Length: 255
Figure 1 (cartoon, rainbow, N blue to C red):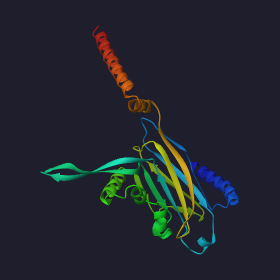
Figure 2: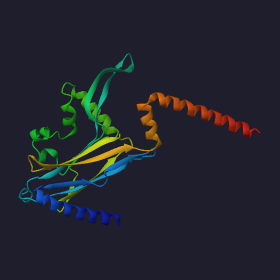
Figure 3: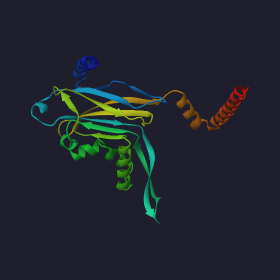
Figure 4: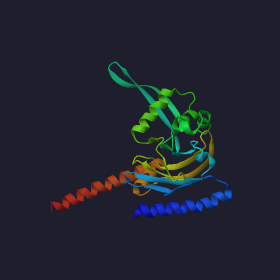
């Protein structure tokens, strides 16, 4: 029943979007089911539902591999990568590199292999793919460090690659579910949907997802980072109160 309601909502939404799109001569529309993901103390991951539609055109009818590429790109941060080497029988940190513009989370999905949808120059010009995102701000960094970062993020399920797995319904509607693991960071996540004609990007639609922490855990986290002195005093008071409460409870139990 839930799936039927969701499909009905999707078709209705896309129909209204297409009316607007035709007036604006836009061949691509997309959206996300939820605009905000809240991280609580018991957060166990979530799913991001992305859906949309493309306008049917002559290229599709002629068999040209017109398609869709979807990227989810989290807030970019600075990260340090250390290279370990074995010296005197033990593993130690040797070389270290600072990487700029590293997304905390990255996801990519497409209707075909990306090389079939775009030329190499167009892939690079539109910064499609995690390699292009990382290389753009780290031209002087050895590719070994970039590849190591990708492996680490992929192992933690923070970088996900689903190339060629996106499917269409009636060659127009498309949708995908993105697994957001329980170790994602808060920030702004940009969802970029690219429409291609087999060689070039013809249209791009963007959505914004907000991932934020809520509750007592977030309050303590913010206090610890923004007002460490107050957090330290608060921690001491809590420890003193807990010690007094335990002592008083033990005294009363002994009579």
